[in-house]
Length: 125
Image (tube, rainbow, N blue to C red; front, side, top):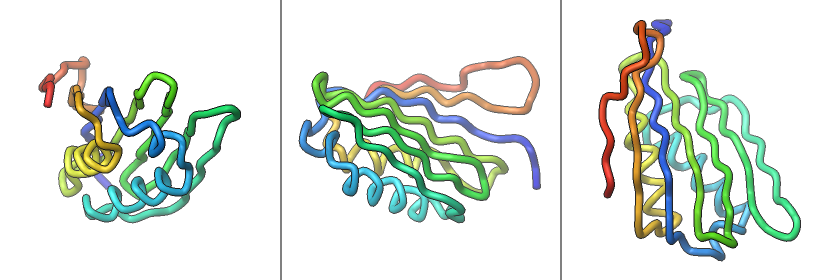
């Protein structure tokens, strides 16, 4: 497998607070996002915090998708990292942002394994 990859780091603001606190919904959203992007799922692990918040990871053959949600702020931080050039991490990140009803969605894409770190793009959607 090619070790070169793409890493999308996204900030999701003004999300649906109930969705940010619903572990089952977030897990389903992340599994669906990985599948929509064409990734092969290996493991899924999510944790619900008290009184609120969810953290989790979907391990894919191509790398991973992660979230840390902060319902009290309507905020979630997500990472989608994919190795190779077949899977587009933007497809998964956009699915997650839409599913969590983010009103503000900022992202950067960082190429990985290609030498000095250089941010390819910054977008506010």
